[in-house]
Length: 162
Length: 296
Image (cartoon, rainbow over all chains, first blue to last red; front, side, top):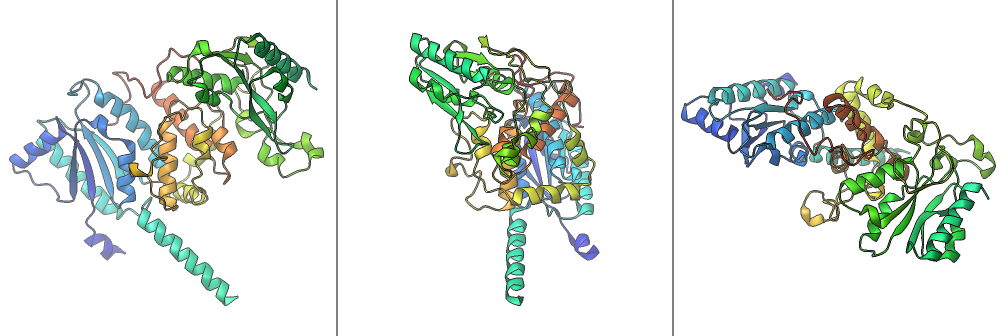
């Protein structure tokens, strides 16, 4: 098991708002700041665009961690988008934990356009944490299908044995 | 016949004969003794169908959506939770206040029809109250045009989150196993959505397979996706009528998820009960500058 974890490269999905976090990521690149290549950045017009269903779908399709990032409160390009996001994800984070996902796998951060180093830091930290806890096996649709097949096979075998 | 049912029938007759309303929504006796199903009546002769017993749990307010395009007024009987559901639909601009005539009935609590289905009619009295009714805080209608009977004392003053807290106390893996077991049972009949007075989208993302949000496979992952999304869509708008759980053919504890959201909303954004008054904005429909900060 430990050898699997050592070679494990997590897939992390980052929702980055166009006006702040995406610019922050751009700055990190321009400043030649190194960060792990495990992230997939998805640009959204505003962090308010990040429908909770996107997060669930990401976990279903095999993402190991999700980061939702946007402008700091007061800096939203659309005045209030990030305040709604904040309310929504305070609840969503708790619901995900209530459903049994690991709390580390879903994180939320404010990263402004001038915070290239913060972007680097957040990505490095998140990758480290998710690498340490290993691949996500919860909520994944391929795994639940596999489990259903395994159960059916076991039941059939049991039937034959009888 | 009990006096409340008698009065319901009299009022229905009076309203339909005078032409004040074009239809009356109430309950009639269903196929089984433990079922009272919604009924829509349009003539005074049909008023005899109306009943009031301990199984009148269906929330009638949702049926007003079928009368959205009706030109006349519709009369509807409301218990505490139906009245909250009515306010909820009003706040969502789904219905118009002046097109409904509300007849309030203070509710003594409804019996659990799933438990009742397991026993004979003679054992009727031993059937417990439905789970949501046991901790009901609003048995009296919060809005009505006319009231039948006298107000009753609520069974509880504070919301009961003990089942939510019991689950919160488990480890993530235990919780995951619990929900996996529950959602494996789901057959995705969408009865919980159809019965819910907070689910009032004209086009539900789950009805349209082209939306791509849900596939036709019935597997636990998709069931869970449906369950979480459904709970999220009604977050801050759930009136705790428990219809979702009552209609679920697989006995999934759906109210647990709704109550989790209610509990978190209370903790994070201040106490809020959906459908009590229509002027307070919904928790997810507004924000405050000093909301708790967890984004770092």
